[in-house]
Each structure stands twice: as C-alpha cells, then as structure tokens.
Length: 313
Ligand code: AHR
Image (cartoon, rainbow, N blue to C red; front, side, top):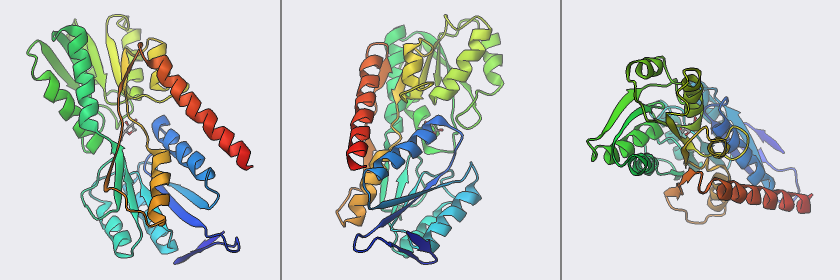
C-alpha cells in the first residue's frame, strides 16, 4: 500500500484501503503505549485499515509536523492525542479545511473545528477520588494532591472535580504538589512529607506518579500510614489494577485510553455514519473490592480479540 504526496492508494485490487494516521504525543508512558497497542489490535481486526502511528516524544513542533505530513499524504482520518491545546490548533484547522476528518483523544484542544472528541470525564475522575477519600476518612484527613500537567485538560479537570467534593468538608486539608508532566512528584513532595507529620492520603493524577510517590514514602517508612490513590487503572504489570492488588495503591480511578474506540469511530466516519461530536468513555473507582473483577474483564476482552485475530489469520 502506497501513501505518497496528496494520495494514499491501495494496491489491493478492488478492496478499498482505509488510511488512518495517529499522532501520539508522548511515547515513554505505559498509558500511552497501551493506547497505541489498543489501536493496533483494533486495526488488525479490520484488514482494510492501514494504521500509521507517529510519535511526537513530548515535542509540540514535532506533533504539528507529523500531522502536516498526514495531511500532505491525504490520509482518510487523522487521530490525535494532543500534547498542547493551543499550538496544535492551526494544523487541526488545516486538516478541517482540506476535508480530512480529525478525532481528538484525551486532552482537549482550543478549537471546535474537528470531527469528534473521545475521552472520559476528567471532572468526574477527580470527583470519584474526592468522594472515596471523604468516605474512607469521614471527612477528616490531610491529603497531598500531586498534579499532572495543569496546562492540559486532564490536569485541570482532575483537580477541579476533586476540589468540588473536598471543599464541602472543612476537615479535609489539601497540600498541593507538582509533578513533571504526569511522571514523578517534584521535590516539594518530600518537603511536605517532612514538614506535615500526619499525611493520610495522596491523590495523584495518574498511577505512575502515585507509584513513584509511594516509593519515596516507602523509603521514609510511611508507606503503611499513607494511602495512595491514582488514576488510569491499566491492566497488566505495573498497571494501576495490579498496584491495587499489590496494596501499593489504595485505589485507582479508571481512565480508559480510548485506543480501540478511536479506530471504531474512524471506521464509522469513513463509512459516512453520523457520529456524536463528544464521545464519552466510562470511568469507575477500582479498589480491593473490584480489582479482580476488573482485571478479569480486561483479560476476557484480550482473549476474545486474540481469538478473532487467530480466526482471521
Ligand atoms: O493526559 C492524560 C494522562 O496522560 C493520563 O492519565 C496519563 O497517564 C498520561 O500520561
């Protein structure tokens, strides 16, 4: 299958190939790797799909270049998991003018000139974390909140939803700490741990920050005293569900990657079906009560997919 300047063509006789380009913003993060993988698996179930994944490695300029490249090639659909919400707007609008459908996944962008958005409700994610802490503590706790990137919509909204809940409980004190874009807590985490003697909970904007924070707390002998709550809830080694089962995390809030749904949405768009502009994915609290059930569900889906792949090969 050839995809050159301004045209993607199938060399597969009558069968029309569908060219989907995906621009991933960050590559060294398991949630995003899992998104890529889910897209590849879903695409492999549809032999007509030709999926190309571009990685911007946290570089806004590279992401814009990648998308420009897809526009030049004339792909059928562009899927974008944005890094920045502003700098990317002109290239999204360029695709729109050229009539190429664009699906935005996860982080929101500051334009409405795209075809569809796909993601879970991050305000609800924050509320779920807040309600869990309120119910475990009866509304009395010292909590460290470790932000993700506050310039991104997940960062902003996870904090907003959390605040909406905990502000109703004067007995809950929140100490804010930064992270390096959804990775590690910054050094003020250690300062807060050292200066506030009775921290009860840490709410981190993803499971990776929670795990890295937990390691720091463990070194200080505080891991049994402080309960960690993360976000993402991936299945598999080092995923949030496993961390809950291993009692590293008290809980995580499911934030689905949307990888397979993005491909399904792209197919519908190419087949001229009308799709909603906003496509919401579900979120749920995962703690020791449902961690096994949740991982069994994910495993079942994986087995079903591999059955279909085997039947097709
Ligand atoms: O933008 C959303 C966040 O990005 C996910 O929760 C996180 O794990 C990823 O890095």
